Length: 262
Ligand SMILES: Cc1cc2nc3c(=O)[nH]c(=O)nc-3n(C[C@H](O)[C@H](O)[C@H](O)COP(=O)(O)OP(=O)(O)OC[C@H]3O[C@@H](n4cnc5c(N)ncnc54)[C@H](O)[C@@H]3O)c2cc1C
Image 1 (cartoon, rainbow, N blue to C red):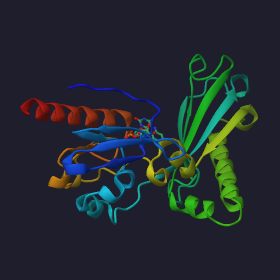
Image 2 (image 1 turned 90 degrees about the vertical axis):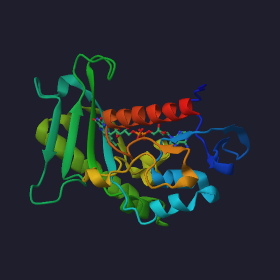
Image 3 (image 1 turned 180 degrees about the vertical axis):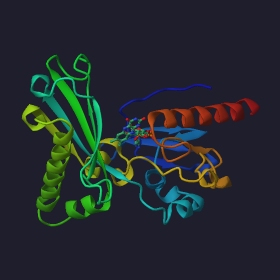
Image 4 (image 1 turned 135 degrees about the horizontal axis):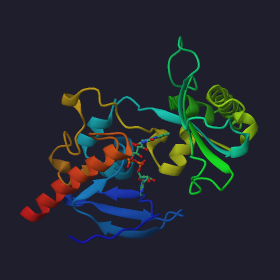
């Protein structure tokens, strides 16, 4: 089996002629820059993104499977560059902070905070430390505000509120953290959609709550999509870099076995 890797080339459409798959790359202006027959095809996509890529060629089985699927979570993130000298010495690097035990988790009320080790100069220059703060957030409200005809004012106000909530949570774990901030970059589901092309900026895939209802890489797609596989956190075993790697290895083995059988 031959392969070629094209990085930084977002495919803009997939068509599905006669059971095979052709992947198209288009430049921003819309002109086709490359087309590729690809059978079998592995889509590292959420079901919604795959449906969009296939467009009118999307088989009914995939449409049915995607319709009515509940949205998955999004994440609100704060990426910080911190002055190491201004942080409390000897503090732990990972913290899960819950601000109010009486309120639901997520939406800034629970925050996971990770700070890079002081000696790790691959993550931050000497004397600085990188911090990631994350909280689960529902994606819909962000898009609703983003689309208001107020020039983004309400969206920006909410983004500001969430940043404040995240910093307040981080201060509980690392008092004085605000004073150490030299760089502050927020990310909402709108940011995730832009940079990762995940539909509506949803992350994390589907919760793996029931082994009997786990989503397989082909299960339920029907004969029309026999050569189309899904990998990534939308299929079992799901979320985490370890999970998606295992899922990808499983699919690769199955595809190779089919290829050898002819
Ligand atoms: C805030 C946050 C914190 C996390 N922390 C951890 C952690 O500590 N440990 C852990 O194990 N997991 C963590 N995860 C989960 C982990 O990041 C995900 O489970 C994993 O990245 C999912 O991998 P994926 O391949 O399914 O999707 P992605 O990582 O989204 O990869 C899909 C790739 O496909 C590209 N793509 C999309 N559309 C196209 C297209 N049309 N053409 C070409 N390329 C395209 C995207 O740009 C992207 O690079 C975290 C997730 C989030 C959101």
